[in-house]
Length: 141
Length: 136
Image (cartoon, rainbow over all chains, first blue to last red; front, side, top):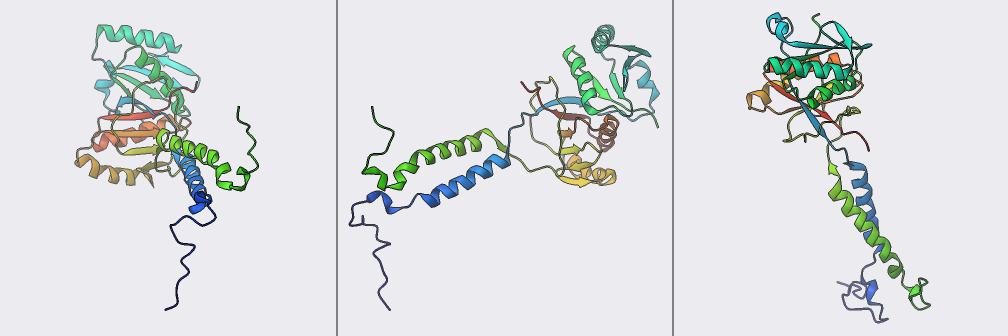
């Protein structure tokens, strides 16, 4: 078996006195850069929040619908009890109605063509006003 | 004061000059490792709705995605309505009650309600709609 060249693999400091060069740093930097790029691309910084809603009752049960407070979200505005009004007024009305009858469910019914963002705004305003029993329903098909 | 220019003797060693760079890169690496959190990428892009809600999402649970065009996915796998109904059976029977709904802000709200009705039919009483706070 031929003698292996051991001089380069030796752990002893090389004879020229440059002790620092035992391990080259360049491959290390390569790996660290790759890790850095991976974490930059793979990690997400979205700060999630959540809104808790009751899941909707099956449509068609009119008994619960009748005593509920129905807020319609239409493409051209918000309606409560057939009247178009602003979000602040609706929140105020809802709070007043719930003060009389606290267990009254509040239903938000989005129309076709209404985006989730608009509904979230309505739900936000109602939640900020203190409405707890919120759920979404849709129009009977 | 020390000169920033390397002395005539030090320039010979490349590693000495590259060390500050590695320090900075290491710091960046640690920052991204700690500050971000790794999550599986969604099968389609979701632009979550903005809300003033301050409630943290809480315990991790199955996530149902609703895309801007009404597509749905359950735990990262695209499904149709029947597929979602089938996929919900196992977790509901296992007693999972914390379902998260990640809907696109531009998705039709009627579609979101349809998905919620599916959840209701499967026996889920509360759903948590994921949102993001308003950007500062």
